[in-house]
Image (cartoon, rainbow, N blue to C red; front, side):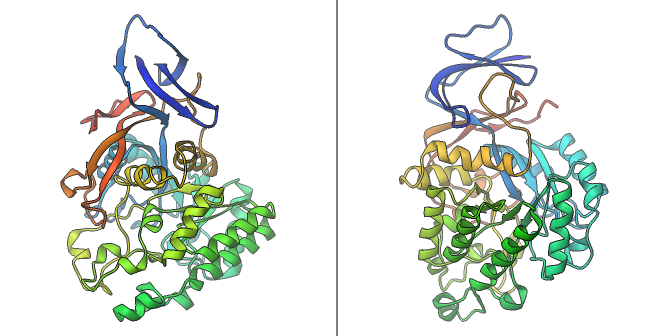
Length: 434
């Protein structure tokens, strides 16, 4: 099948492209880019006023499948991903059973191929059962398609075990993505330690509980030569450590989330809204400012959502008993266009690097660019679309987010995966051509 996308602004910093032109797609790949292109047969879409960028990738999502399908599943959460403008996601391994062997890797891949609305990359656990005690079957998982390794949701506490996981991952040229959390310091912490924890009477979660593990894992990266990726960085000092490691030439990268870029711990009010309860917690205004500066100066490599759907009844509990996490995959692009690009923190080119280009590089995934020969994974953005975040607009099974009611400008309207539409004119397609 041939597809012609006409009159859109094509934006791709990888190839220095920023112009209004047409894209001709055939058999899942871009075959020609130019002006006033013609094709004898196929589908033609006029995308005047829209922007086409390489397909967005969220390299940190929780699909909840297998084991927690009441929160979300591969079908519902990849549908949400398409609705948010994403062509690919990387699934975290903290499922039930844990994705610590090839059987679960194959399960996720197979189900995604059957019911998914975007590509699903699979990360495997660093240790069996996420317990930090025994190395997972890393080689077998790599052989069956695992793109990265992480014990996300927990930090590997034993330094010797962490060193061993890095030694093994290095052999397979896989990135180790670390949830940096010293559990001895964090304990049962609920919110950022300091004014917030004192004001609310909740157990505090010190910034040092994150920063100490960032420091340790940078040292282990130096020792092993393994690519270390710090997940959901939240503190100014943590970012400084990563900036220094990069200046040293170490293979270190990091990610931040929209909620840590837009929310701070002062926003948790006396209503104890559990939608603000995330792991790691919301930090101070100064930390938020530092993360935004890190976007602009190149220290931060990726924007991710840490999309964490939960059932309503789970979040509708006392703050201490409610689970950590919020949904984010359907609001991420709009939030970033409105508040990071719209407020002049970064430009559109930088946003594309953070949400499309760099995640693929970190995960060793195939390069996607707006150039002939590339896979036609594309996201179409309407930069002028004004919309309000509403629960009834979500495709996810969950609505646990504090962003409901926020007014945003800019969102994805169309998504193409391998040249086939998964979303058209803002509506996710009922079926996806496989």
